[in-house]
Image 1: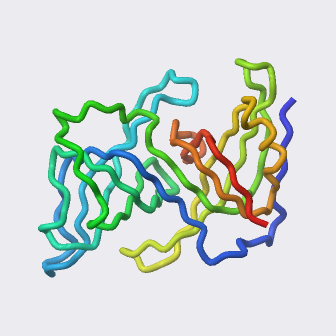
Image 2: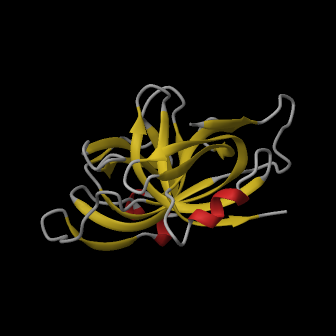
Length: 218
């Protein structure tokens, strides 16, 4: 039977920032117009997060923006692939998202035609946040319980010059090396999680991350 715990009302994050960063390879689809006519400004392009779905039965590609504050010379090129590390700010109403990166710290790894790697389920996530709630659901593959929990994140969104709050869902499978970590996830606690984006929840407008490593802060 599933069980649920929820963060009591009025328990805010204890840190001013609880960001999510993503890393991996992105394929640039289309360059977008710069934010303005200054030499240095926000340069954006469209990229995609590709997932197989939680049960590997719903392959999908989700478009978003990949943005840096730089000159046009340092902007990425259409039809090229880059290794990147970016701050991840998802829209709270849809699967849209923005990635903010440093233009000097992207690495060209080839064109769309020459890149031979796999992009599906390979967007790595490091999430620092406050656990809002948690629940357990049966895992059909093992007959044990899988832990699902939701973390509240907050990060600065430079183009609107405001702090931005959002929630993401994290799941820990009952594998031998991770099952013991399930009991360490506590509602209201600041937690650092590493994993990979594997799905998008259409009903609740949340990204789903499969946890690979979990670290805790006191």
